[in-house]
Image 1 (spheres, rainbow, N blue to C red):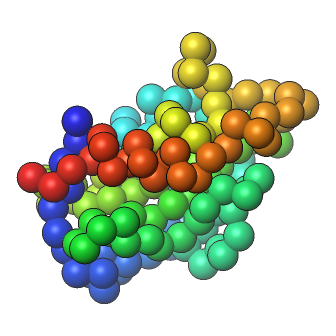
Image 2 (image 1 turned 45 degrees about the vertical axis):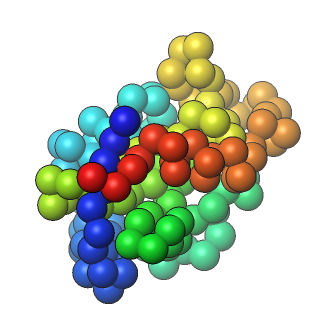
Length: 142
């Protein structure tokens, strides 16, 4: 179980934009976010940035408010040889951005905890509804 705390949309987006706008992003994310996201092994050679409005392989990208006060920001990444992975940022109870890589509805090798090779076809595994359902179950208000 993970926990979020409320923050205004404006403050949340400023925090996300500051992190994603850094010239070292995504290779120099705060350790707490990298640990959260990289429980699944994938590369950041190709990644969505703050201003992208289209994700890789149909994945969601950008800001969402899943319920009042619960703000998230979807991003995607993967190497040229990998099927991309979808992950998100949210505001944790520690007063910092946190990361999460959904399992359900997301397309990655669950048994090996890594991205699939790009040559493998897995488009039918992506399910945004299941992904959001999991997020709402696993990240709750403290």
